[in-house]
Image 1 (cartoon, rainbow, N blue to C red):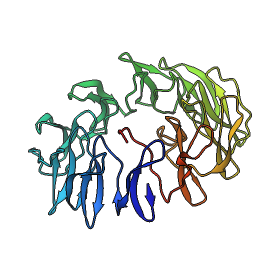
Image 2: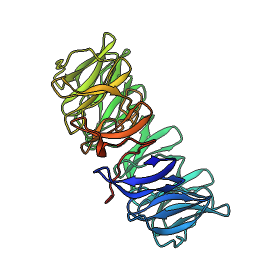
Image 3: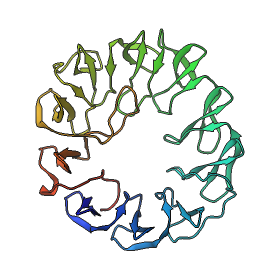
Length: 354
């Protein structure tokens, strides 16, 4: 949180657990958060005590026990005790991910580095994309496939395009044909010219055919015919769709369950509420379409759209990050402001003990 131009940290009750005292501060990642004191960066723990004194010119967040830090024009990996990890990295350094894997580049090829400082696989690929749930897209030449975090091939390198991993399925393009890879099979989707990634909120994803969007399953079947100009993903068995210049919601049978009256609409959260836009500001509806929190906020924390991957927007664990006028804060599902207080800036809560 930023107050009086200084950053601190609050808990989910809205109380300061680390008073505003830092010129700049980043979110906690595990047990540590990067903060700027003077002109140097260091790391504090969840009690606000220095875990690593400020001494670095630039820092990245901790992942899998290591963070990248820059000092005297040299990047290194350090652990929570500020010990440098010995690695064969000579060119560009990459962050470790949650699976304990970092990219390793040598000349024009990319491999994988483990948190023991040793190579998991030698530089083999032209491109390795970020891992998603333990799997990463890889490219050699014009063809794409997928590997797991041990470097083993999960999907053969034989597709012209491929989506990110999801247990429901992975979309791909072979030649001019789009389909979904599921249980090792490539299931063609009739007439599709674009498909979006599956997510963990539904067994359906959306696809486009002749400039219209509908929903498909991992067998390659059109479950909801492509009749919409824009859609967003299903969550709580409801999806926002755009028709006749307004947004509304349909169920997984394609039935309309709310009126098409909103200027914009986002996915439902597990709390059973979804952000909707009336004219210029956002409020929240329940699953019947009833406005339960008036449209008086700006909401910019992520969002899921037809053009991007599903990102957090609206409620998460009972709180939503919103802007009222020029101030930021959090509201609960009753519309009450967390701690009764607004801030110059507020970042999303992360999984720490704060």
